Image 1 (cartoon, helix red, strand yellow):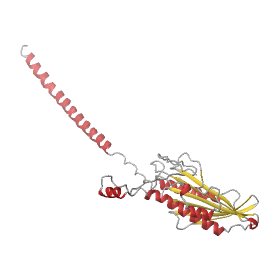
Image 2 (cartoon, helix red, strand yellow; image 1 turned 90 degrees about the vertical axis):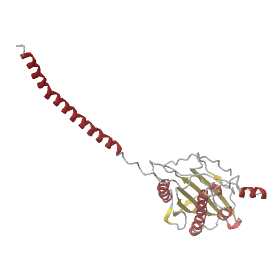
Image 3 (cartoon, helix red, strand yellow; image 1 turned 180 degrees about the vertical axis):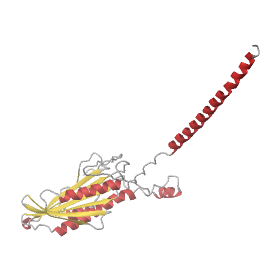
Image 4 (cartoon, helix red, strand yellow; image 1 turned 120 degrees about the horizontal axis):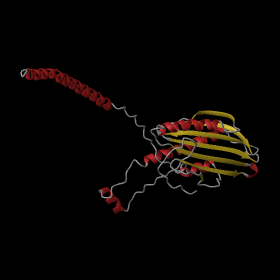
Length: 289
């Protein structure tokens, strides 16, 4: 009887060994699975979704003064006896995004009648936006919209549209006739795009008191000439920022000072259109007419 107790203890000890081994085995498998899961989780986190490509930066971040965008000589030729030689600026709450200017005048020839002319130029600039696209892409959409709008002018007759070569990156001239104030008016609207800016220029004229109605060819020629100057004025806003001012401590700067020379850096701005409201952070002052 005394021997049976130690023997029973040995039997119980031996019986416990497999249980411990099983427990160790389970623990080992569990650890291995945990490591695999952790590895797979960390590998899934590492393979993040690629970011969207950045949109192209806008070429222009400013606009010229619309009332100075067309040469005074050109205004004198196209709008003789203009009421306001410096033009009348349109209203805008952000001149770096939208602006416009217009001129009108009646050239009285006495018994030979009078010639009336009206000229209007408008600018619309678009910023690049990650959600909306590049400024150039947004301007292209506005360009097409303005061409469609010109062709759908109320009361327009004999509407025609064709590409206008040599003006900006793309341009279209829309011509039509319009009867008002008992006179026949001849219209030409040129819509042009350069980079992220759309230029819309309208020129029209009529003969009063027996004067001849201006030819469509002369109106188109004048409109295209003025539009080229307006587009060039937009391009100048980018060119003006290419050359930085001389450093105050440089030898060239000292030489200029000694000679009494100096440099000035003027920047203009403005803009105009409807829909897809372009954004801008700069708000330059409008020049008075």
